[in-house]
Length: 319
Image (cartoon, rainbow, N blue to C red; front, side, top):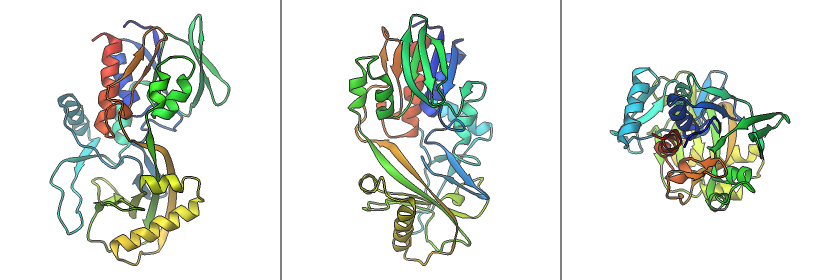
């Protein structure tokens, strides 16, 4: 499919993979993202000397094409493997990949050379004779795009595409779970027998000592991910209450008295994880000039986000 100017909305891994494939094929692409930098849910939060990967925690590799990309990123010093201790002291022997010095290093490396308009939240789309026009949060209009790729969580993509394509109904049907993430840095190490734990729990199924990952410096820093049901029930709760609840549950899970907290933050991911994927790598309405990609198309995995965007980019590039 030939297209002139292409807008990719969303600079998570799916959007970047799509844009990278298109640019490599000689297409003119601009990526728009509301965040301060590329990464999406592969973001790293910093406060003083503390840092946390507070969205995706790590990723694994199965696809040969993705494996080659990961190999290049590792050679460039952007990725290393993490082998955390699980409860009971068992060391992880699989390759759990993490960015260095934060998970965001990988998408930012992939974004190198791309035209990325950060801090730009696209609020609406309109189709003009000259092509698509995007309007952002400041009321600015950017137009002349022949094709728009929506590389964002399904509910957000469906809302933006509503009225422009019949595909928006299928996208709107995709359900994504929320997740409260709490990031805490402590004055001294937490006396835990593990670096991470993923266990069924009605409040706190995931906890991780972020500074156990390679290339990390700074104080003892933990990431806590609340259960999807708990997050949904408490989605609009006060941040202080959420922090207290998850810290309390961390102490219970580890059976320890936590050290004094140096700094603590919380992030509410409204669309953290797809419940039932679409089952197709991408969606494309050729007549409307609008397409969709994201992890929600294939699986709740980082690799799925890359494959969705990369395969859509290949289709659009005609390769």
